Length: 360
Image (cartoon, rainbow, N blue to C red):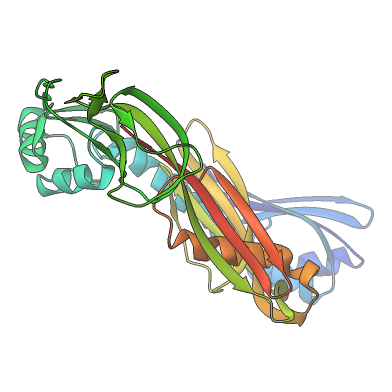
């Protein structure tokens, strides 16, 4: 493959220019002229010198085309990201089947606990799974978390882990022993279902932790009673509140005008590139996927944001006050929120988070 450069340019006094190139020791392999347009072919090593002379003489360079290995070098020099991407792709394809890029955890234990158990036996993201002993890993994980058993499957670069807890068999219930249903949460009773025993509360009652909801006692028509195992369900409405004070101002977020742009590579779901230099920002992302490689070139455009306070009426502050009141109420809430009620006054907003507890 011959290394050469074909240059097409336009201008006057072309004969004088060609003579000057020859005097400078530049070999013209091909010369084609048509009026004021000329096309010459020189070696790739002398191309920069020719281009510099043409620009010095103010000729209009219409096209520059490289051939051979010299063209590859120019392409890489101008588009340095391409060889980096290709290199990463080659490495990724060579090792993806041996490297763990993802771990999916299912079963009776939380993900972090299982990941820590796996890490203790050398299984984590980025680790080589080529010589992995599945039986040893399963036994080690089960022993570490106190599970009944663990199952590990490796497919490609993903490890699937299922960990099952020991099943405890509940002892049989003796229906002849007394048992009361006791309130475990404080709140307002919204529903009472008594199957066996004596209901001590009704809908609308306020109860505290420890109150008897259904007494383990059966009363007969003659007035006699007998201890029984209380059965039933009582639903208690739970409430947690938080307050946000209105002070005549609200917080707004605006752009500073500063923009930061970066190009990164995404390989197997992980992004490789510099971090944004802004503390607060919005970002727009454009991905270009390279098929059939599991690779993406990502362009991130960051816009810096800043918070400022401005004067505002209560109505203008409502959304912000509701959000603050909600977050405050959340600190007192340890249950699933089913409803939110807002109480708005001249002094601010109160958020009440409603949930339900069922006591059996």
